[in-house]
Length: 172
Image (cartoon, rainbow, N blue to C red; front, side):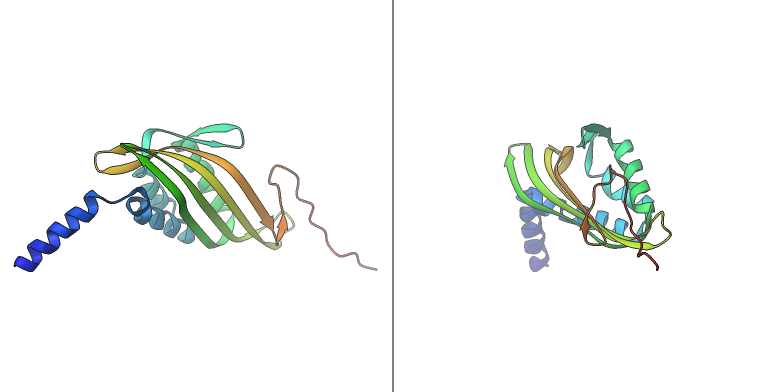
């Protein structure tokens, strides 16, 4: 019984002094799992608990609310025939009282069917500058600003804002 009490005290102490990276690790794993299984309900469950009510995502010159961001995420991964990689990692974090900033790497890769009816490998990597606030004992994401985005289509650089030029071998 004494060992159980000691274990409880240790667990409470660890959680009281946990940092942003460890506090969000489980939530990010749930987001990755939802992407891998293309489960929109699990995606929403994992992300809604991670953000503030006034959350904004700033990407490519646009400000999106949480609901707008989720709608775009669902469309994006809905285009994938198969998701082969989903990974979010906090690269660095700085906490100051009940506020924190972090730089996060997010990568999504998979196979989709293009307009040419062929399968293509797509990889998207994004670096974000994130702003967090402490709500009770939990860190909540208040804003996420994309600072760098790279995409590849079949291993070649790709800009989704430009028309895709898929070439087919010429027949003679």
